[in-house]
Image (cartoon, rainbow over all chains, first blue to last red; front, side, top):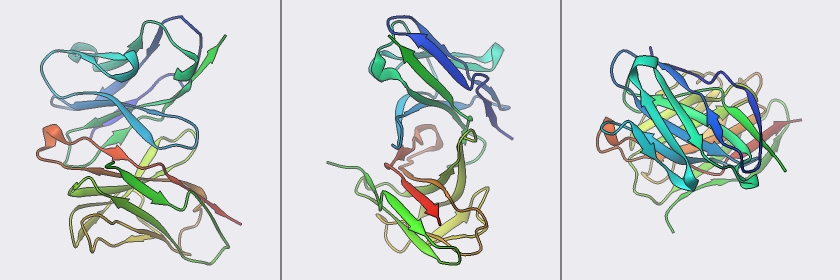
Length: 113
Length: 115
């Protein structure tokens, strides 16, 4: 069965610093991978997704993610965070069965001045 | 503008009452989903529907019911059998033309509180 682990529950980063959020997945074949962001009390917004091809994926809001099959990882990065990036971030995997997404528990990002 | 709407944004329920959460989409998506979100647990799938008049149980369907009479609507009823219904409920939809293109888009959510 597919599963997703986000090892970091909470990350604090200074404004302007770089950010990396970790995501590890468990799945037998090539998974379909997603990163979503959620502001407090809001729904989830899709940041980026990986299906195939180039393993470095560009998304919205200046985010990118790299698929590394050897490490079963799909880490999210941003070179310079803004205060508006404070939110909760979810990694998700699909592929085991149609329509069934597995979400990680989320990483809460706090941005300090 | 196309999108997914959920209503109400906040809902309060007394113990023993059934309540229905609304989810409507005008994206012409075939598939729709209901998730429950609790702090520190991510999203858990309650029910999903791939086409009209068909739906499947997700991982935590007990105490919930759904219907899919129209393509654009997928209401969720939280019944009195749900032991701990206080949570944030999210509705999502997706096309999907194929599993490779299956991407879920989310509504703004409904926060249900049992008094």
